[in-house]
Image 1 (tube, rainbow, N blue to C red):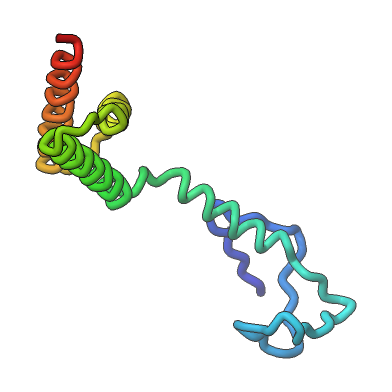
Image 2: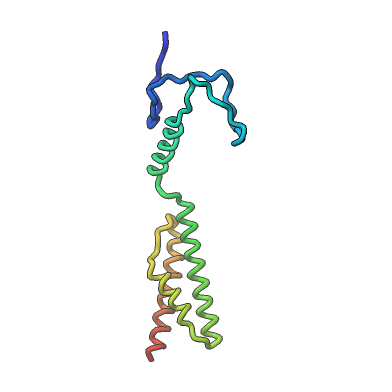
Length: 144
């Protein structure tokens, strides 16, 4: 008597029963060391496709990684602080700063992305507000 279990969810079946190879399959093979497959056994690309389809389906179901959101938020905060520091240095040196203001304006115009960490989001909002205040002050001084 043969017991057949249903395939796993998301698995693709080929319609052919699995055939056992004469030798155990190696986990790693060098590209030049390929061996011929017996005539009765065919390579099963459907199995590889099933694994890839399952992986893509699982990735599509999961929300974006929180660490990646946090990393991007930290990077934006560092960029904003660096630009504010450049603005401060150019102001102290008495140099014109239109390039720094343009970079800062484009960074603040992009809007804040939620990182998932309320503390980090609060600090980023304060940095963004400070950048907007500095931009407004410099534009008002340039008009006067």
